[in-house]
Length: 317
Image 1 (cartoon, rainbow, N blue to C red):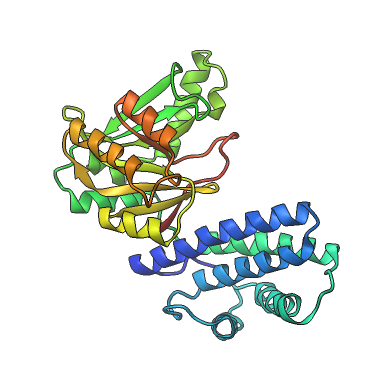
Image 2: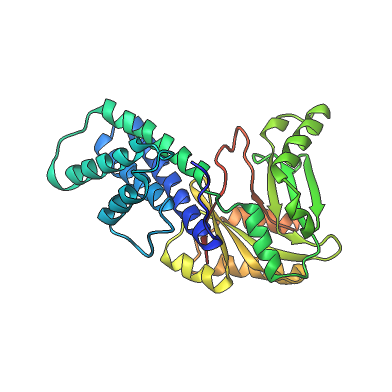
């Protein structure tokens, strides 16, 4: 199927659903490995529930019911040859099984059937990601620049994600007009080759990360924090700052939209967040400590063999 022609608002909504799907698929995998098949059914169904909504953003608004999602999936896609009918059947089968498991039966589903559903869900997820132009870091940086036209440069570090200090670290600066031609994943691959030729150990594990520091000849920053878990209280605090939540593995990153002018103001902001009661034990204090010592923060944006999960746009706050 060709990519769906979503506008920017629909793309953000679809990207949120796909990020939620990542959580559900990971949870289902863990439960299947532990042979907790009843519990896995719930997560397999919700993975399908979020995938289907990501494909229906032109038709569904707000918080639709489970019945509405199933109905609209059939209505919109059942007669489209490019949409595999097996995914509509998968959604209906998982919906029925989840209802039975949760409300009507105490039996344990067949392991072979659950493993088959897990494989089908991964196929459905891959299909949706091919069909939807997800919000990526290019979009995020374009958005930030549109609100802050005085930004002169962004910067990216290429580094070993297992070692935060006393290791090779490669920094690249680029002005915003390069966002239309600059591909950071390609840069990371090229730099890995350079590092390999320089005999840097484990260079294939290196990743690219966006830096908080802006403008080569100034000391302005974007706020960046690493968050272990998010709830309503955390979101309310972050809304007051304004920015973007990014799903990264089992945790989250937060990227502020507004420029913090001057290193001193940036340091004060980070230290104040550490003392915030709503964020206490939620934000990664180690990440903030390393950032303060280095003089800037970095948030990973690419993958490598030791960091295989790609950070995903989750929500705008």
